[in-house]
Image (tube, one colour):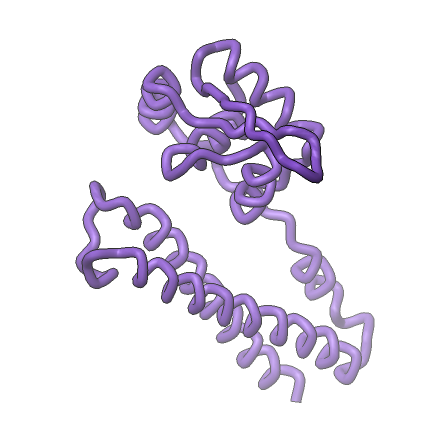
Length: 179
């Protein structure tokens, strides 16, 4: 199985989802298209890692809602124990900054300002998500432990918030460099 297959199983550990919902929820972690997800779901179903039910819809075709099986959870446990690949980084801004000396400071500041707005909006979304996680948690977030349902999402959103804080700090540092 590939990493995307395990990612789909991971998302199903919290609740059942349709293929479309899985495609939407995998995006923060992994870039994937419908054309990748649906064949993988069929393979996961054939292997016994997921099961599905047909849900009738009045104005649309019926949809399949997938759930993880015990066999799927066992596969995830094995995958978690395996070594993790190095992260893949693709950052167009970094490539532009590498050769930023080709443009004047004003153009560089404009590019930076656009990215800073992006980071600020991203941080707002993370803050809203953190509020939502807190509302669904019986404990204060800083007291969550590995067995708690919200733990995985909490630590991932916290990590993402730390990254965006670092990106915003870098923007401030860059503004000083571009004065």
